[in-house]
Image 1 (cartoon, helix red, strand yellow):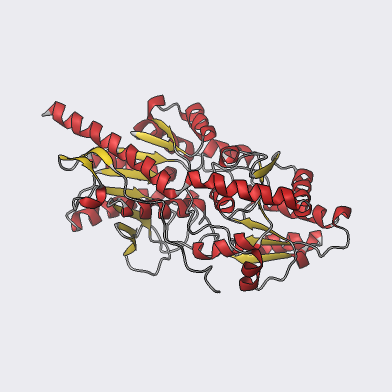
Image 2 (cartoon, helix red, strand yellow):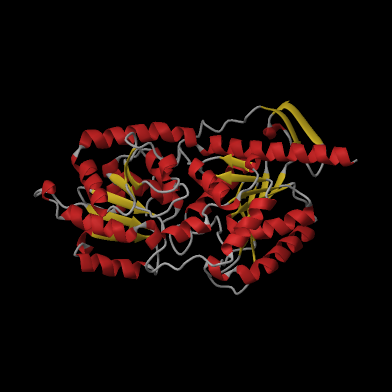
Length: 453
């Protein structure tokens, strides 16, 4: 498939002037300078046990968290931070160490059987994974100044390493067990009973916890009561140079799609993502009299793999299979083509801690239709760049789709405002905020060491 074109030179990631930086692992002090002027690097051990940042997005459990870690790691690497992201090897056929960007390595280590396993089956292998990280560190004769863990399984591993290495720990939940349990019904299994205990443990042991939205911050506080001064709200980011407005007809030509109107879903094909609701709403849209004799719209679903069989069956049962196209998982470099080709992006989730898809769609100047759940309300501007509907409201979803497809002025306005709004979520901005967290923690660590000396 052709690439979405040459990527324009980024002008939003210029080197930042930093007035003072202190970190552990040495007593380096930088003043009135830039990271790019120094050869000495802060070293960060990023832990992502079950989610490799190099995985294709869409199949199994590969989704927003994978993309988040990849983008953050690369952006920190551009700031001359050395980031090693440790992940479980699984079925990864590549080398143990892969360079994912300047200063950013992905280290895939064996832990458990060499096959894909759901997160709920990985608890017995946490210790093995931690020991593999320790062995890698010793083999390289290296040290890390800080740990940054993603998801509760990684948090459990990082909590142990924090005690061994005596370094600060930054943690991000990405999703919360109690919230997922609150919306799971039907075919999706409940979260394992030990998830909450691990989430509770890391809430008490992390030096700083990053929440993607005010809603997530409040939920963390409600369920696990970490010290309030350890919680920070830093949203997810988007690559505004990659995800940019493209010509709709050109994108459709490149993708080989001839439809007059296109609706798009991007993500894992799971019940919690509301795929069943989306298919039902799409059926009601197709049978709406307001569409008249115009060509029927198509629904594209990007993501999924073997799990598409059940959704294909539901589409047939609903009588919409001729207008639904399952596109499978796609590399991030191809996603702008799909966003560019569509008339609107649908996010019908039952639960979202934030939504990278919302940011990507907005950055591509495409209108959003989303359910008002979790952090989604923080990831969009209701009425400005998105239409929000109540959760599990099939009629509301269908009505919003119909409105966007039939009101060109509304659609153009939502897209234009979305692009403007997305600029504030550039990965350059978000990575700077994460880096400031690192700096503050390491400055505290140096002061502690000085007090003990």
